[in-house]
Amino acid sequence: MKIKNIWLAGGLLLLAACNESEYDLENLVPAEYHKILYVNNSGKQELTLFDTEEDNTYSFSVFKAGSDPYQTASVDVNVLSQEEVDNEYSQLEGVSYKVLSTDCYSLGTTHLDFSVDDRYKLVDIALKPQQVKALMATDPESVWVLPLHVTSESDSINANKDELFLQIMDVIMPALGFTSTSVTVDQYNYGSAPDLNKNIGIGLDTDNKWDITGQLVVDEAYIAEYNEENGTVYQMLPEGTYTVPESVTLASGITNSGISVSVTASTLEPGDYMLPIRINSVSQFSISADKAVYPLTIRIMAPELDRTGWTAEANTEELTGEGASGKAGCAIDGDLSTYWHSMWQSGTNPGMPYEIIVDTQAEHTFAQFALVQRQHDTYMDTAYGKFYVSSDKEEWTEVGSFSLEQITTAQTFGVIPTQGRYFKVVIEASYRGNNASLSEIYAYGF
Image (cartoon, rainbow, N blue to C red):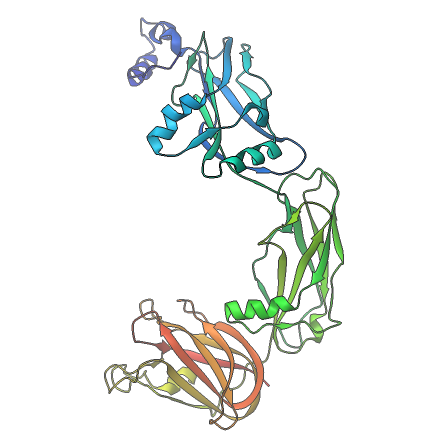
């Protein structure tokens, strides 16, 4: 029996609020609304199965509600036929839905009886991943589904919440992986970096019912790949400055665990370092494709170099249109309110790339640079570029790159530690057409 539209719901609430009404609420509400059954979390649900030798269990609940739910009720759980699915879903949506065969699943029950005290009942579905996988392979272009429908001969069913349409998205092998693989740089000042003990999480992507062991290695080759893809200059932590366990074990019932990695950061020279830890093998199942490597990263900041006496020049400057700002020297004057700006009024702009060359007046080993956008919400325009170092302003060595966010705080970038007297900031792209500006440029080294 399907639920009727309760168009008089607002009126019922109003009448129920009248203390002296001559009508009893029980008489005002039609009998079919005294108890109403519905599927919680009804509608389409996407489900990925894990390919193990055990059934995958999915549970859903049927609730009893209504104006007087303190009554008994009963409901049947059915699987829609292929014809019903075609009529209700496939033809309307233009999607080829296919109903799983009965050997792919079993229902814990197909009939539910509610006592006066019961508010909901659980239904367990045992899905057999290997059978489902084999069936999906016979028609990979179709969407395989288990469409459940609840009915009752004696009680009302909410017509908008009477079906659970499970769509099987994939059958995959459980995978072991790091719980996080994002690059988070731990930054310390040279000479005051502590020795570190890092706890790194590792887990299985489903409930663990097995004893699983994963073997770990340090994958130095990963650093070059990462640097190439991200424009960074990480170098491998020196041998003897770290310890990594050879394996990790997850006992049955333990889905997430971790490893302890130590780093003697106090002995590191200034620079950007990476320790890429890879899950190299696993005793069963598979290794997560996108969570196989944890890139532990550390930045040892060199001291900020004193800019007293430094000079700056650029292949483009705005000498008139920016008032006191615009000139290259404004980027090293220690005043955040002034800024270098590319030419737009005082002459002909050469076009990108823009170059700012800083003469530090002495040889240094540069380890990091920091850039500050113009302090204006609309004109934070410099996007990305490269850093170069030279001893004679003739031969330049590319040492790193930068990609600036549109924020007003200083943004620090590691470079390959390189000795020279001059450094050059080359701007290759802007957030604002052909315009570029920088409030300050800092250098770090010895």
